[in-house]
Length: 303
Image 1 (cartoon, rainbow, N blue to C red):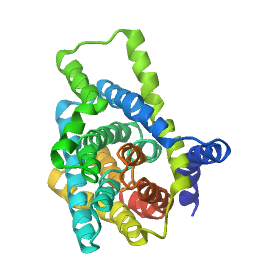
Image 2: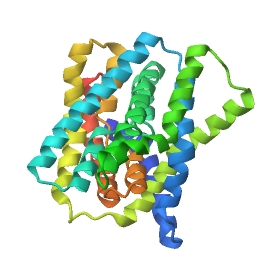
Image 3: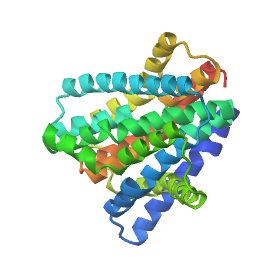
Image 4: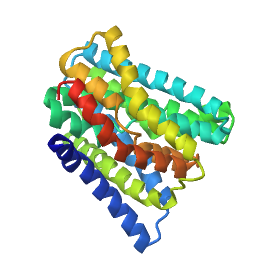
């Protein structure tokens, strides 16, 4: 019980408070969530992904292994969600929303501090790589998925050219390959803007809570939350046998796979108008319920 309370106070409570600020301010002043989404999507998130990639000290083999592990977990969890959505006979938009809420986890503002708190700095480095894999996939495949909720595949693929994070990723890999170094002032500016990404996402989450609709999509909410919190870590445990990761890498990879739905999915859903109320409901429900699923998972991992 003490461990559960500590987990809540040190990790969940700050998230709830930050989201609560967004909720309260929109009760006081009317704020369009699309405005915040625009800033986060086009400025803060690209800086975040660039900063993480260019300030990582792990070897190339470890980077490739963890990113590949993250990719495969998300693909397999998405496959389970696709089958579940077909069984529920969801329409195109809701199916797209179900996929993004189950595939992409809160590996940043929840997963990173939790990994460091429980397993230390080495696990934090691996958890950061997993986070990078999630961001890369969410702003590529995730954009295609949410776009297809309202448009054709060719137009959805065309939307990838409008995603600044793609260009940030390419530039970061170029920096890593060539060994170039950014001028210190520019590097610090990118770091500051990247640091603003997570709190802005939490504020957006609070604002979106005003639009939550629970009864309209109760079954998909239950399905998405169950897949995210239970199926996700089980898939990761099975895959880890194949990848053979041990120690901090194993702990970080499996823990990140058990995180609730990513706050940034509300950004994608809002930006492309793909059931943002449903997506926010899943983020909210999963974040609350995750305390009950992460505690036994941490025990399994030796936390």
